[in-house]
Structures are given as C-alpha cells and as structure tokens.
Amino acid sequence: FKIEFAGHRASGNGGNLIFQSSISGEFVEAFLLDNGRVHIRYEQALFAIARPQQRNVRPAGKGVAQTCACGSNILVFDGNCNFNRGPFFLGAEQADMAGLDEASLGTGGFERRAQFHETITDRRHCGRHVRRARRIVRHRSIPAFTLSGELLTTECMKPAILIHGPTASGKSALSVALAKRLDGEVINADSMQVYRDLRVISARPAAAEMDGVEHHLFGHVAASERYSTGKWLDAIKPVLAKVQRRGKVPIVIGGTGLYHLALIEGLSQIPPVPEDVRSEVNEIYKAGGVPAVREKLEQHDRETAERLGEGDRQRLSRALEVWLATGKSITSFQGKKGRSILGEGEWMGVALTPARVRLYARIDRRFEGMLMEGAMEEARGLEAQNLPPDLPSMKAHGIPWLLAYLRGEMSAELAAENAKRDTRRYAKRQFTWIGRQFPFWPRIPSLAIEDRLRVIHALYKEVDGG
Image (cartoon, rainbow, N blue to C red):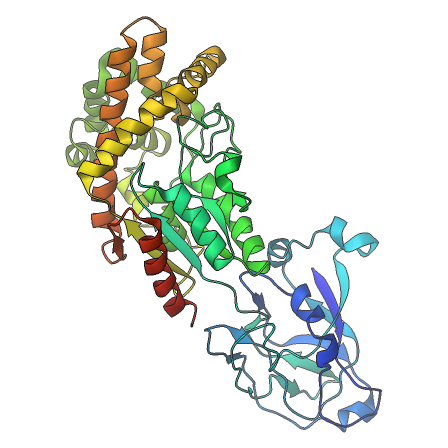
C-alpha cells in the first residue's frame, strides 16, 4: 500500500516546516491504522529532492516518535526542512486495518494522496498535551530524506471495556446503558449469541433491547457452522479497529471467558482438526460414552487423560482430536500463544459477580420466559436441519433437553427442569473461571445498573486518562 503526501512550503522556501491547522485532520484520517499506529521501515527513502532544498536542511541525528500523555505516539517534525511530494509505503495488512481497499481508493489502486498537516498540538486528534519531539528526519549523503522511526500514532484510541459475567447476570442491559453513557458500541463475546438460529435460547438482545446502540458479532453465524475462539478473534479484530476509528468506546461483553482471555493474552496455536477426525471421535463417544473417549486418550496421552478427569467430555474429546490429528499432546501447543489483539493499556476488565442464590432464581425465571418467547420453536428449527449433535449450536443450554422432549423421550416439565439445572451448573463454572483466570479484575456484585455504571465509569476514567 502506498500513500503520497505533501507537507512542504513553496519550493526553495527555507523556513521551518509549519503545518496548516486550518486543514488539519486529512492526514490523520488517512493513517488511522492498526490501533493508530503506522509501522515505518528503517531508512525508508521517501523522495528525491532538489539541490536548493538540500541547503535548507540542517543535519539531524536519529529522531524519535514522541509519547503523549495518553500513552500513544505521534509523529512530530521539528527543524528547518522542505518536503516535496513523494511515496510513503505501508504494508497491505495495515491498509486493510484502515479499511482502505482497492475499491475505496478508486482507479489509482493502492495509491492515494494525502495532505500532511498539523498533528503536534491539535487537541482534536489526541485530546492530550503532546510534548515536542526531536527530529525524525535526517539528511543523508544521497539526495533523499529518510525516516528512522518505528511507529506513528495519529490519534488516541479509546481503550476497550471488557465485561465478563455469568449467564443471566444482566450483561446485555448493562452494555446498552454503558454504551449510552460513554458513547460506545457493543461487541459480543458470547459463543452462543453468535448463532443466527438461537436468538431466544441464547438470550441474544432483540432490536428493541439494543435501543439504537450499534451491536457487533451477534447472530452472524449459521447453526451449521463449527464456530471457534480462533474464528471469533479473526472477526473481532477489524470490528475493534472500525469502532475505535470512529472514536467510540468498544464494549466487549459476554459470558465466554475464553474469548476475553484470548483477546488480551493470545490464543494457543493448535492446528485445525480435520472433519474426519472429529467424526471419528464422535463415533467413539456414541459407542461408549465419555469412558470410551477417555480410554482411547489414555492409550496415547495418559498424562492429559488423568489431568482432565472422567466427566469432562468436551475437553477429553478435544484432546483426543488433537492427538489423532497431530500425533502430539494438546499440552505441547497450549504454551505457544499467538500475539494478543489488545495490549497493556488498551483495555480494562470487570467481572459481574451477583449473589448466587439470586442469580439461580433469575436463571429459572428466564428459562420459563424463553419457553413463552419461542425456545421450543427454535429447537424444532434445529431439528429440521438435521445437524450433527456435536456442533456447538446443538449444545446450547436447553437445546439437548428440548430436542429430547420433541423426540418423545421425556415430558416438557422434565426437559425444562434439566435445562434450568444445566444452566445453573454452567453459571457455577463461570464463577470458577472468574476466580482462576481473572483474579485481578474488579468484581461488581450489585445487580443494580446504576451501581455498575458508577463503578465502571470511575475505573474507565483511570484507564482513559480522565
């Protein structure tokens, strides 16, 4: 991706490089890349210059991009120099992050002209005081200017707010209220609310509940798809970039703790498992249940089988799939994590921890409401698709029991009670996850939205610099 800029006075003018604040912002908008950073190769030649202009340049040492109070970096020129128009090269990935594709740039392909203007003290772009930096332009013996910086930040991006909590703890209503309070947009971090066919049973917010707030990654996946944490990470990266480019606060909310953890720590680089291997493991489970899966895993990876115990079907199956697909233990991959999407200072996290007795009562009441709103019809819709039972969508809380009722295997009352019980057990595991994986996240036990908003707002001011 190539961008050409012009930041010079009239040819031959030897004055300081003074940017025009009256038209500030064009350059900023063109370079909102990769969380506000532009990565520049060392010694990247920008353009040839004429001899008269060379005489107006004072030799300068290797310069830096200066850090501003909000933790971002900003490119600052300081010195006697004149610039002519010349090419500025960026990687294709950064161009994609900026949303600048070939179609949007017109017939010029990946070439676009942008004006380089005031980014030094204009508070519209940073909102913080920016200290003047030393020169990052240096004069070479060859007739060219070169950049020696590593990154350029054009704007202070809003840190993301991550909210984790057990099912039925009021996350959806909180996210909408918080988005209105902080001018944010809501991004889903719930592994079931991604499914288009599970609006009721997953408690995905309806349009009226969204109340005009922009929501992302809700109901965008077919029930037939085997969605994963890796796919979610691929999906959220461009969404975060777009939300932040608009100057909005990303509010990443949901009950799937692994999504949040992968977002801030990276994801283990486990190779994809072929579909035939998944089918093989599923057949083992059908034939002998969880004990058969565990026994098969013990033959190849005894240590992992013993560590996982006897009742964890999902993790036992996953470990066996990985071994059959790669010939290696799943533990050999778990220590090798990819790069996190959100780094230090780019997010804050809170955990909702309401009293369990009250939460369990809410779970029971909510499931009864789901039955009245159409949960049984959603189960019928899944049954009509004849989907494999090991798909994630087929394991949504309540779905296995409702399908059992539809097959005539139990009464509606028993199916409902089993669904409530499983959901309460899931909530208990979510509390355990918070304690183990997010031990330093602030806890908010109150169910009152105003209490939650007050706490989160106070914490966010600390992260966002006031």
